[in-house]
Amino acid sequence: MGHKKNPTFQANNPLHGVKLADILEFLVAEYGWPTLGSTINIRCFNNDPSIKSSLKFLRKTPWARDKVEQLYLDTIERTEKK
Image (cartoon, rainbow, N blue to C red):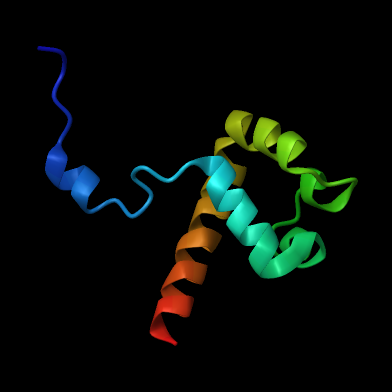
């Protein structure tokens, strides 16, 4: 049968089913690299930024990924209130 995941948790998780690449592409389209780099000061956003290099870094760096995911959630919430 496999292991069961908590469906309640996943139903309440706004990031469930959202790929990191999609989050990053959304944020780049919304803010652009310069603003993204000043909002979250990490080298892969400020020095020769690309989706590929940023994804590689974010997948290995939990604190940076958390910041990107939080910015995404905040941005989605802000745009939904308009």
